[in-house]
Image: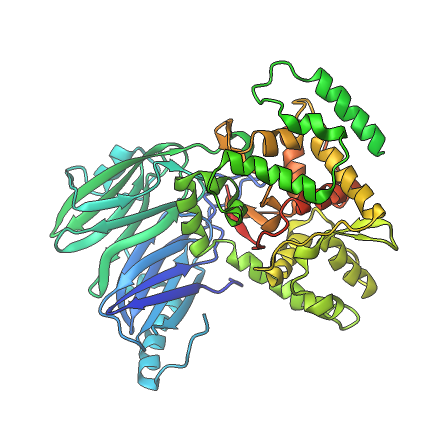
Length: 104
Length: 151
Length: 289
């Protein structure tokens, strides 16, 4: 995957809101390519795991109904400045990506 | 986002986890796909996921547009105030595969998620929450109207 | 050319009134009246202010979302973390990659390309034609010995403008019509804006001035004021439209044969269209339905 995961974190006291954008085509397997007229094969993020300082806090399973370039928002608590949030995903082809960001 | 360098011990821990999560498949952490993820009707999907006995609950807040601007990106937020919320699920009842997402909440996360989804047609959205081992749900109708001049 | 367009507009206005739910307002009727750009903009703005009282002019950059609170909330949700951000980054790579002569677009354009988009299109006296932002980018390519990008290619010209236009975010639209040559092109653009076209026999002005804010086929029609400030835009959050691609889509929807992207007809239309947004703040890359 050429495009990196993007994360934005806003901390308010001991709660941090994490917003994530994961560049991915999220093909349903139902769409026809308008030029080749061939069905575009299913290709979607199946699993997303988020950690706070290395400990998993969210373990998500997705279907192909999640939008292209998926957006995910969640909140971690307790959150302190300097804590690290990491995101990793894996898709149905076994491709994967990860990113991490520090809470300010 | 530019990751700032971490203190070394912390970085080692994160890197170790991410190595486990990425280099080995995520499955290595223990991964079992929910049987509700099948192309079928909403009722069959709920039954497959063991949620057919779920109880309607106003302790779940499902925030989604009444009329979706665009069926390709419907912004949905789910909040649960049920004690011991363990899982949050989202279904689009008329999608070819109704189960859209399963979120397992682990210690350190609030019982809230937001995600953008595709809807095949106007339908009820259904949030299901597993809390204290029991299933609860909340529904909301979302109409999709893309067409006309925006088409 | 202008005379022909006006004649066509007159003929169409006379012939096409039947069975159209959309009313024909003053717009079509004033097509023949000589009018200068400032008066034109002021008169259209005045009509909108009567129709949408109390609405600050800067809100018009929101288009139809200005008139639809639920749509506006969705717009804000999407724009808070837009799904097309990765595509804009791809545009940045195109922008930063040196051309064959080793120079970049920033080297080629005045002030590194900053605060430029809001002054375009402009009339070039030497070339006696309207020059658009896309044409300036292609001029850089040509001078560097590179092949020009096609004006209808999203993956090259589209993405390049997606980044390049962000360098003008926040500036206020300032498109000038200062000379007789410029005025002639602006008049030509105005004539096209008022000309009924296609099987549906609609003119731009009927929808986006006369009936702006009303609902047609489940859609709120956006006012023309503000439209030029936010290109490229992203339909569905994923499909990029430059100004000419958007004009093309409009023409297809009234069942007309569109002019080619990059054509003189569209350049002149864009020139006229941009002056109607003068004074409004630019923001490249917005979500549209």
